[in-house]
Structure formats: structure tokens, C-alpha cells
Amino acid sequence: MKIAVLAGDGIGPEIIAQALRVLEVLKTEGMPLEFVHAPLGGQAYDQYGHPYPEFTQKICRDADAVLLGAVGGPQYDNLDRPLRPERGLLAIRKDLGLFANLRPAVLYPELANASTLKPEVVSGLDIMIVRELTGDVYFGQPRGMRTNENGEREGFNTMVYAESEVRRIAHVAFDIAMKRGKKLCSVDKANVLETTEFWKEIVIDVAKEYPEVELSHMYVDNAAMQLIRNPKQFDVMVTGNIFGDILSDEASMLTGSIGMLASASLNETKKGLYEPSHGSAPDIAGKNLANPIATVLSTAMMLRYTFDNEVAAARIENAVKKVLAAGCRTGDIFEAGTKKVSCSEMGDQIVAAM
Ligand code: IPM
Ligand code: MG
Image (cartoon, rainbow, N blue to C red):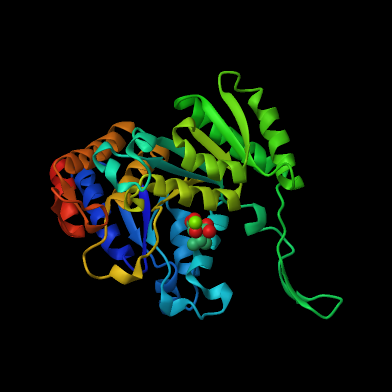
């Protein structure tokens, strides 16, 4: 079980340290875990002059799974676009073929007040967003900036999906729906964009293989509205790269605590990159204030999806629930009547609960 560990930038190293402590518990008990560290993003640019250097690429290609903290920081904002930390993230997704991005939005009962929505709208919320991650306008060619025939400058990108790309992400989404509430909503903009009209057509075709799953379709603007109006109508949502980027941020905030949300990005062989859904939070970096739970829960997803170890995954998730039930909170989820803890103290508590 070889894991590439990419701590990254900002709070990345602090939250990764706590996640590794949790995995060390399992290793001490005999799980054959092996950790290999490598830089990504700004950290990699500083060391190697590139956000996804060959050194890191080799280690990640060789690993069974990748555990990532976060990338990005204001000191890198003025770099040439291909050298920015975010490009390192896009490069590793493409390089490892991580086309299926799973972003759960789960509301923990103890944190019902953290949401800006009314408790009755979000209590019990449990949505899985399946976002296609290696296609769409993010990677479509041609792209760039140019001067058009009228002598005016313009920027342009290409929204494109091949049939095989839509089929494989649709299969992932239907398979997940089968293991959950058997409801899948495919999000598109088929009323305007041919790319997503095509997407819808293929999803409908794949649905024939999953007669038990109730499939619905929704335009992305309506989906954005419905997520706020009545989020509990959703079980699994599947959508393309750009819509998924936007809707998953929106869904994460229904829970009020982006510091709690994990994510998995999988390829066809179940190799995966696991990372918290939040960013590098440069404002609190190095202060031992960050919430490590999203990263800890990402290790649970790793055990579940790459290593097929549901028991170990559930054990980590239960340890987190126990610590929340005991009232431990990092600053981002703190409220009166609970106990404020640091990043490393949260790690202590989760390890103890394990
Ligand atoms: C995400 C992020 C990335 C994306 C950025 C940092 C490139 O917003 O993982 O959602 O747009 O995919
Ligand atoms: Mg995003």
C-alpha cells in the first residue's frame, strides 16, 4: 500500500501531519502502509521550478494512492500561468487519468448550526457530487488568448466531451448511486450547449444498464437554485468538469464547514488522489489553527475506494464522529458551548478515539 504524500502549500503540511498520524495507527497495527513524500504546487515550484516536477510525477505514478494537502498561495499569483500551483493540480489529474472526482457533502448533526441555511433544510443532508475531472472546457483545445481578425484581443476555450469520457463517468455515478439511495441527477445545460446535450444523450443510454436507478436531468442554473432551495432532494449528482467545480463548492457550503469535506479523484484502475475539498488557507498557515478533519476523512475515502477496506474507513469516520460528539472544535466550526482545539489537538483526539 504505497502512498505518495504531497503536503503542498499553506496549511497543507499541518493537516497532512494529522492525517498521517491517523494512518500510522493502522500501520502500527500491521497494515502494510508505505509513505513517500514529494512536493506539489508552490512548494514544488520553489524546489524544482515547476508545480508538478518529474521527481513528483515518478513517485505519484509509482504509488497506489496519493494523499494531497492543498496547493496555492498569494506569493505565486504573479507567476506565468503554466507555473502556478493550480496548474500542478490540473497536471497531476491529467497525468494519472483521475477522471472521476467524488465530492461528498454531508452534514454532521453536531454541526447543524454551522450552515447558513435553516437547520430543517439541511439536517440529514448527504449528497455525493460526481464531477468529471479531466475533460470539458478545462482541457479542451484550442484554448488561449489571441488577436482576432478585427484586431481585437480575445480569450477562448473549447467545451468538448468525447463519448467514452461521458460513458465512463456515467458508469461511476450509476455504480455509486446503486450503493446509496439509487437516485441520480445528471446536470447539464442541454438547452444551450451541444456538448452537454450530447452528455445527456449518453447518460440516458448508460442508464439502460441500471434499471433500478431513478435518473433525472436538471439544467445547471436550476440545479444551483435547487441546491439552496431543497438540497435534500438530491442523492447523487453527476456533471461535467466546470459545472462540477461550481456546484461542489456550493454544496460544500450547505454544510457550513468546508473544513470537514473530503474528496477522491479516481482513475480506471481505482488508483486515487485524495484531498480535502478546501484550499490552502494562507491566512492561517503555520498557526496550528486549521481543521484537519477533511484530510483525515480523505484517508478514509482512500481506504474505501483504492484499498477496498471498508472496515478501516468506517473506523476513521467513526473516530471523527466521536470527537465531534465530545464537543471538540477547531476555530472554523467552533460555537458557544463547545471546546476550541488546535489542529494538532484535533489530531490527538482523533487518534485517541481510534
Ligand atoms: C477544485 C479547484 C481547482 C479546480 C483549481 C484550484 C484548479 O477549484 O479542485 O475545485 O478548478 O478544479
Ligand atoms: Mg473548485
